[in-house]
Image (cartoon, rainbow, N blue to C red; front, side, top):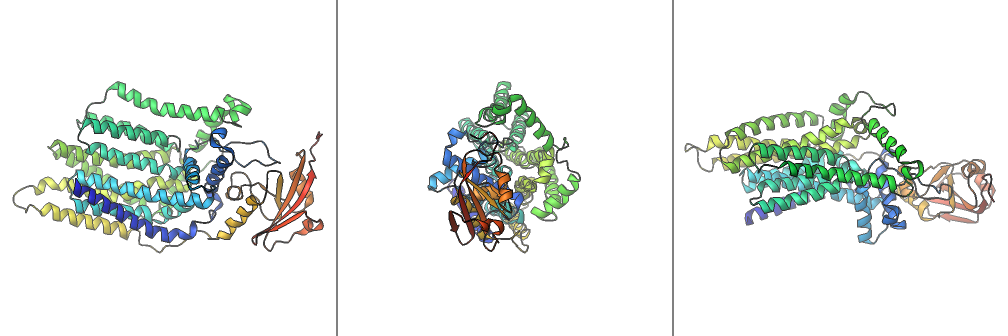
Length: 552
């Protein structure tokens, strides 16, 4: 046990060093707004956490409005398609640091989670290899090798720096869940198994409030536990226990509906529960590409080819599919030949993890394939399969299959250990080699752009209506999350009047002019205040009167 702990610590050190290398590659990303408009989810995470910081998360019910309150848009509209669990860590870490939530904090959390995912994946490989008696050194080499494709592939490097979204925020929970599953199969006593299962249920229940992938994984996990019972690897599950497990996702979804229906400013409160349910049904149809709202075509060609290629390598899909089939065949052969109960359990655990890192993730992406097509970073759900199957589970299954043939007296006792070491070295070399490609940053790295938007939010108030001849920060955009203030496109005072045509009461008009921008018609009046941050000029014209009909 002591040797195993030392080996585990060395694996953690190895993964940490690989993560540090990946951090050096992506460091230019860390303190800026996302480089592509489609990656607005990072800015929105910062915006929602900041709203909870300002107004109190319990008072808001952890709701996710599409824009901060402003005098010209006092009524809120919520984004309700996903639960808010992905953004709670941002708020909690900001509270722990005593710093207001911001885009850089979100980026660092994203990168930190990436490292934890790689560590958990490496420990999954280490546990499975140890159960199959591969040897501590060989198990450690295989485990560290898993971290290379997870941490150094071009897609994960970009996504876990600039795209903080529910689709990848859930992966830390699912990976920890799978890590505990490997510990379940290696546990010797029933009490230990019950404790591990309890922790698994806590983690997956938390994940239910992050992304819908967790529901898919949970369903297939129950199937894997039933299979373990059927093959005699674990004690038989009673029907009562299966029903109790099924109640867990039902209760979580019920809580999501309570949040969706009763949160302040929710659609259900404004338009009724029936309207909210209908909208949810339409959203599900849309994500399954069953509606006329943003339909897509050519998904399979893009999914198998372009998406895997863009985020991993040109051979990524073939590598995952081929190694999965090969591992499955080897697991079946090894399981049929295994006579010792511990050996059968180890082989079954290998097959179970193979099943759980591939089938639930791909089934989820294929069912909600419209979402996968338009939010292509959802392919991060294939990251565990890409790292674990070809570079860990396949060599482990091969060694487990070969072991019975090397148990005779004709071969030296240490022959299997030598073979294991050779296979482990080959696995780690292949894992490192597949990430050896010229690294380049995607998009333009320009921290000044983020700071410019941030200047707007920090120098304006609720009663300010912000307009600009060249800038716009609309709801659900990268810009609104960075500025924390609506910015309306208006080239002159006449267009600015249209922005406030439904506004009653006094307000201030603030004109945002990036450095070098000509003020035009806005220069015809003298502002009450001018703020120049070096990145943007803000001209405040105070105490305008609302122009809406019926104003007192």
